[in-house]
Image (tube, rainbow, N blue to C red; front, side):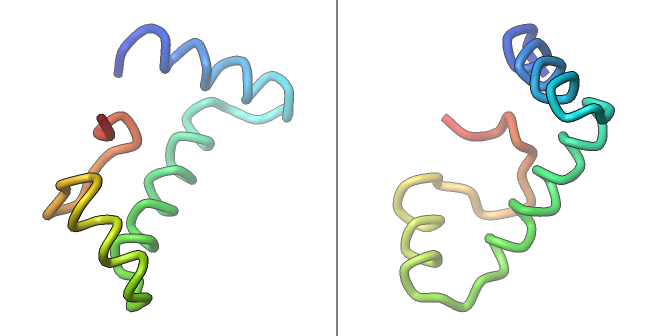
Length: 62
């Protein structure tokens, strides 16, 4: 995880009174759910824009 992303997580965590690790895990779960979507538009997005074929981490997007 790069420093800028870690700082962003810390800011969001502080604002919401939670741990940064929890936010990161929630992001991982959201990515997993989205990647398993059967929605054709979601599948197109994963295939065309993100070029991700397997489980990713929140910082894996370019």
